Length: 440
Image 1 (tube, rainbow, N blue to C red):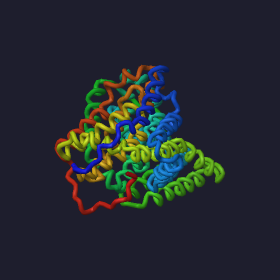
Image 2 (image 1 turned 30 degrees about the vertical axis):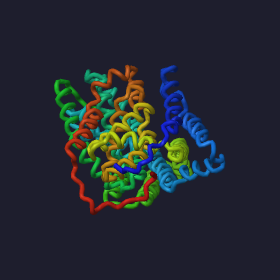
Image 3 (image 1 turned 45 degrees about the vertical axis):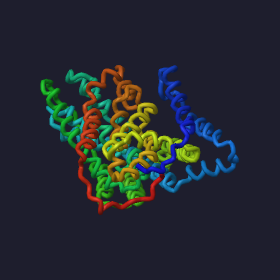
Image 4 (image 1 turned 60 degrees about the vertical axis):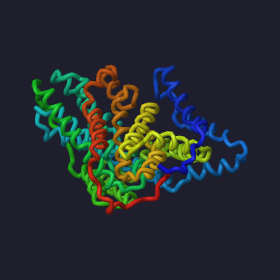
């Protein structure tokens, strides 16, 4: 730990407290943790940050806010969000999601149908980059299987949510992955490899548990599922391109063009329909983009007012080792996710501080990005008031609490994350990291 670290000002963290009070307080009062518009809560919180350092002029504080909001990595992250939204919506509009689901069901052994639902969820969520879109796509299929076979609906939904969180954590076009790698300063493919090695055992064990727990049910799939292989190709192209290190802008931009071309060839839409689909995909990311800007500005003001120095001093004074620092990062993003019920916002909020801690204890940025994404996804997949569980349970008209005991993958993902810290795995070489400038 640096001996010259400023102890900072704890009151400078008040804007974060105001946000949590607004967001969680409204949720407790109304029973709906999404009733308070997140953007409005952050704008109010940012306004509170302007009240500190009264000796400084308002214009200077406004310049500091704009510096944080306009950080090059924040802007780049927003552009990536927009491209990812466009790709996801265009591929969905041209029938890509339906083809992936139907192809998977066509080749699925009947006795492994719930295991298959988990695997389908993993592939779709990696392809789409969204857990919510995955749940919306395959949860209705899961409900049908439950009704036909007698397999508990909560167990089926647990498999669906687990598969959705697998890709939400790993996908190259997931907003959580994009946020984690941009803030920590590493490449998508490097973070993917580290993250994948940590969570792979969780996925394998989940499949074994699902296979054993559903072995006594008679399952017959009699339907004929229609699909078009060509509509799956854009997903494969983006996945392969990301793994071999294609620039993310070229990757997503090319993916959009490729998906539009296939959509027009297969008469899924015309040129105007394709442009509308692109615009709708970008529109779906606009709130997240605005939230990222406001958080960037607010965090810069908090840093200027001494809040970040206080947190760093508070945490690092209690950390005695690199493992302790990694546990601190995991705990930090976990708490923020439990408070916000949004893993992307949790990463954007906790990321800059995690970067400072990682730099202090020389933690590999690939590892820090992975820990942020793993622990935020773990809690996001378990929270009974999170959008994922609320959506899945709502489709089946059951309580989200009923599904929790079947959330094998999110729970195992968290356990694997803890073991990775304790055991110091995977071992990483220091010579092959290509870094970005970071947000912190």
